[in-house]
Length: 160
Image (cartoon, rainbow, N blue to C red; front, top):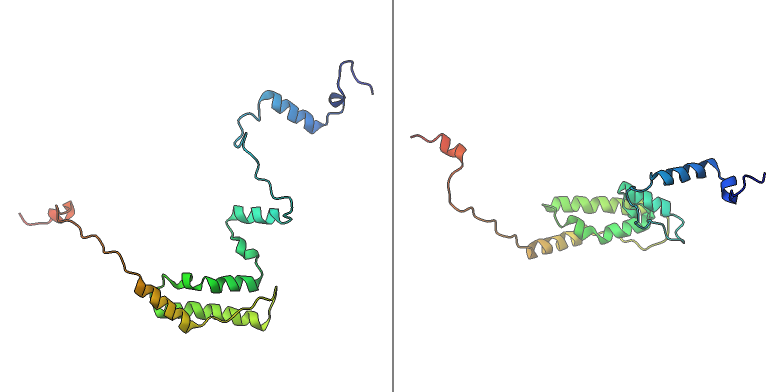
């Protein structure tokens, strides 16, 4: 088991995989790979759920999906004004608030996760803030088209 003269230790005990990698490297199979020379996106050393976060990032799922229900509801309540800002009428605003209120009540009946104080959203208060935001917002005037030549399809049917 001494091997051939001039043979190094690693050459004697090279595994099949190591041999294939060495041959591919010698043939230049790894030279033009995408990402060559760029740093690896390695997880933090103290993050035991790195693989979950990277999978969620790859799938486009927000990391808020991992939050416990109490914290998710708290964030939804904080974002309520932003969520209703672009709604067209008061009925739609009240429907969004009613849906969130239904979820808060369901959570308060059977709480799970960390104990976080959660208040039920008030539809009247949200509607008042929505009205104030709409009153403060002034739409930009739409540009008036300059008089010019009519399009060809309008000129085509004109009597001569």
